[in-house]
Length: 331
Image (cartoon, rainbow, N blue to C red):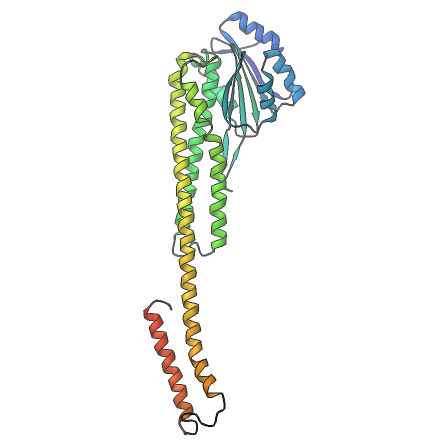
């Protein structure tokens, strides 16, 4: 098989069987048997490599173009000969606190499933092994593959949301600790970076809501009507994940607002301290400036105790101002 084909198998009554290597022969054999379907897994195929698969399975040109170019939003589209679904699996790197997403496309027909994977994080290998271990589930045909892949992707969303919630709680505790948030520029940068990761996650989970709702309802071609309860369960998990993401986004915005307010209060406090010290420095400067003008007729200019008296006056004024500012919390 070509290198871009990760796996290709015929499943009869839920069990993997040895079939012909040619796509058209495998598809013809599955259709002739009536209780079989073909599952082909591809990884980042080129246009020339995918031409063979698309021609054999009769895939729609627009869906093929989307599958090759990637960078698609999660969606569900119905064509004459197949159902086309786009999912965005996500991965979370705890060491760098980053969220990255891949893309997973599924073509579901009457007796075939073609999966196209871009990037990392798609749980197809684990899903295939799990389904092969449960023939009673796999015997329901291509719809089972669509459900199992969707369920695995959404379940991983739940895990990533939990990791993000833990990280946000740690960030919140650090920012609002007595010694935290002192480096305003670095703290704001961390909050903004976290918000970018959250938005990357939301781009995967948010648009998927409508396709899951359609799959959970009746009348979708190439989807077994009995599968609606299973897709409703996936949709329920997705809704809870989206609610969690919305809550995290609101909390993050509140944290940023509170941090900016905290920075403003700290800056005001610093300005009060600067103003208080400036006022205390201005008083002796003013007195010394008056007595430094060298006029002949000035009060106590020729008095023997004039110099210590002026020094004592300046010291008294400084002590008085210091106590005043200290009482008002400016120092």
